[in-house]
Image 1 (tube, rainbow, N blue to C red):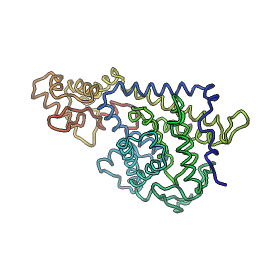
Image 2: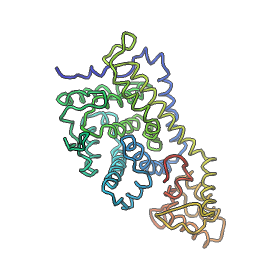
Image 3: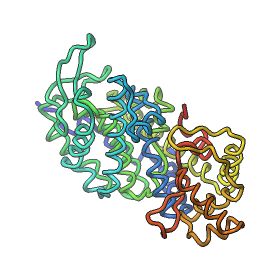
Image 4: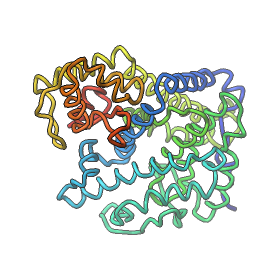
Length: 406
């Protein structure tokens, strides 16, 4: 007899368990904080942050799986500067693939119905694997011998073991994933239950382990897509994966605990431990709330203005290093006000930028040209407004401790 979706019950913690916990409050807090973050940013600034955070999200999500490619190595690969070591080069390409899939998700703008569909989940896996080197499709044993190969977008076709957990048999995956999509479509849940369901689905996806490899990355991308589709429009400006990677021991331990069978009559009524699922969902919501708070603090207007000023001062003290653009020239102090204004507005009209420079027009135009050349501002045409950007050399000053910078 095959494995049915009932083997993964409870699907979310029961109303009784939720009523005795603070999960509903954490879900509401996440929704409110995420919306508040989106509201404090101009749409253009939010878009810039989302583009920048794709590197951060890729770094941390891949780090959980053992890919230690640093952000500066990812950005080097974006410029076509790959490592001479073949293995490191493959991992750089894997990081770029993760970023490309994030961009694909942004373009697709999937609804909750689309996110929780067989076709979408398989396409998400395919989009990732078709972008990485085939050397990373190989499945090896403990001796390094190839024993199988991933087929992008296809359910696994063999038995696997994940630590102590033995996922359902491969013959059951098609109906089991169809039931998963139906069961976990958050449109079935109202209010705070919607976000709880998304977090519970994150574990149950890992429990099913539908693909031969890539389940962790695909599962995190799937969760990000679901949170965005559920209305957390600032999701791209903060990284759940950053929080999971920074507490990876807890993440993996709680995933394993939620795999456990029911522990007696006081542990729910499903096949799996309700307490384990409750603890996992609580951890996921805590992690998400922590990351939203962290980014919100980074983007506090007063503090960010101080960090922009500090960056300009560091430039003039020759403490800023860049390997991609020439930043040997010092910056006029007026640059800080121009950059800060561009951040708050997302972009700045050229006339306003010239006025803020408070210097002769020729000198002001020279400063703006310098800011563009160094990647601190960008333009779509010679007459377009100037958009705020986050070049690699300014990143440690704008966003300290967000990610390793060496």
